[in-house]
Length: 202
Image (cartoon, rainbow, N blue to C red; front, side):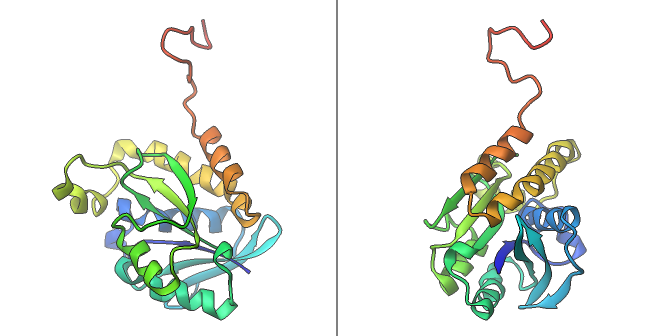
């Protein structure tokens, strides 16, 4: 079993917040890859299906962000998973909006959901960090991540969620570099020439 967990807060009032982009990504993967119905399991909701030919469980903890580790750890222990068989998707303020980076291990960088998972499982699992940008001042961070994506952000957000879903089978295969490369390719600007170079239409 491969476990893909997206972090967020439950309830419609949180659904469009930047802090919930992990939930959004998991939901898009479930929809695009024909996963089964969501069912209450492991202090969250889970759906089963296949990614890259591998049986996969998608998990959205319902414990609220700060206690995400309770739900994720329960699923990990139920299936007796190694750290490499868990990937967590979550919002990252230290990445520009729309950027995605994978990593294994390391610190929690102040993210309370990741901090909670660390406390239950340690740091040696795989992660997909989804950039939501930094508001510029530390005191504005909470309001930023708990704020909804702006209307002018919806286009790139939808494109990004589609790209993450398209590339998700690479995560199941353990090919995190290929996942990251595929997402970057699918979300690159149409006109990606360097300054001073002719555009594609010239």
